[in-house]
Length: 516
Ligand code: ATP
Image (cartoon, rainbow, N blue to C red; front, side, top):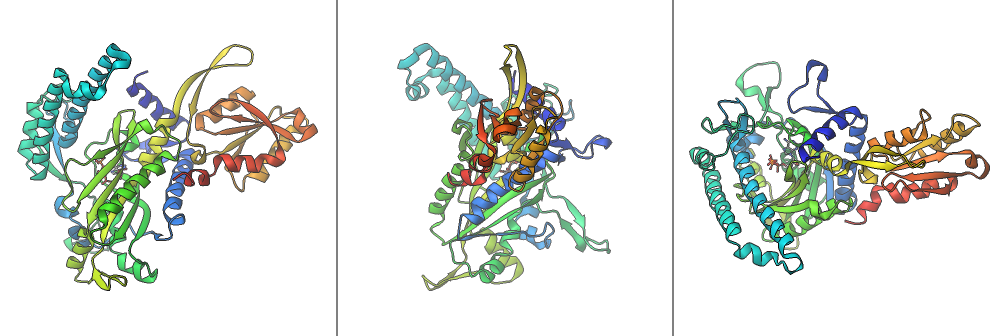
């Protein structure tokens, strides 16, 4: 199965099993807007809790807030979003499809990098044990040629972004002979700038002064509350403010399911530090955030850091954490050193003094900021894409069966355990219900008595339930149950009295938090 087929299957699986639906589907949906169903919202809530606890519970010097989506319009002038929150867009005249010019170029570079990987793979096979990758990529003629092409395109791209020079960007697309994936032609329009903010009106008087924006990032709600939080919480630099909330962007390219949505959710933390210490803190947060990802137990090879080619005007360091989605390595989180730009600009635009008096240095300054910013929806997609598998299973009678399993990290799974009476008689069903009643205070439990036990296991595998408990006739005699592991499909027999501890050890968010 190709990655593209796998991705399509995942999308229909998400709909069929109540994870994610197209928004207002009965009206044919709304482009790049999605609703979370009964299991999707549980998964999302668990991800948010994992993030929130890792920030606010585990750090004495990080507090959480919940700022409004609507903000004073001056906020977005100060932040630079009114003037510069633009994406360069380009249309293909034949397919009439719209693309982000920068994304087309980045994808072209990724393709070239893929060619190098293939050369390396071929050579590794040919030379076997004796293969020295480093030597190969620094000496092989073909690899050096591709690398030179990458470097040239990238240098032109960074220069075009920096100005920004839209004609130069178009010229790169023309020179690289980039074609539209739909029409296959090179018939491109000019590149234009497009502001990503949604606007709306506040109040009943409809004049210009009442235009406000739906926030395109949650960070500004933190910056404008810097003094409120610092003073009311008597916070001492270094300290952080965390927030989870909705953000809105009128994205041009909206073809990757919940990877790029027009309404999405962010988990952002702004960490305020002494000027001059920001790059040390940047390194610390960069490593710490990767540890948060890896503590979920996901294969580290699916992650990589990506250094920004071009820094935003306010940043002095920026890295993305990228994950290998079915459509390639893509950003899931950004870590940015934002200097004193945001607080400085808000001071300038509001006319208010926004500084911090550092008692240890006996001096006032505008703190510098390290930001960690991650999309909740991209994390949901990451957990689903990483976990989705189709497998052949050998049944007890020797015949084979197929199963679709979602190997979501157990602590994030929507349902933690299913309790299944082997048959619906002899008191087995009541016993099973008693177990659910006792455990549901701590774990999201399901009771299921319909169909054969095998089919019930399949249903739970498909929604990623890590444990299934079966109540059988032996249970009625000795108060033990079998517990089946989703991933290994192995079963063990344990006493009902030990279930709570067993489950607690296996599915608690704490077990991941301890690894960070
Ligand atoms: P991209 O380059 O993919 O457009 P970005 O660099 O604009 O992303 P940031 O502004 O750094 O993204 O936003 C921080 C995080 O918010 C991203 O890492 C991503 O997880 C999430 N995010 C941004 N835009 C979207 C979107 N349209 N849909 C879902 N998540 C998003």
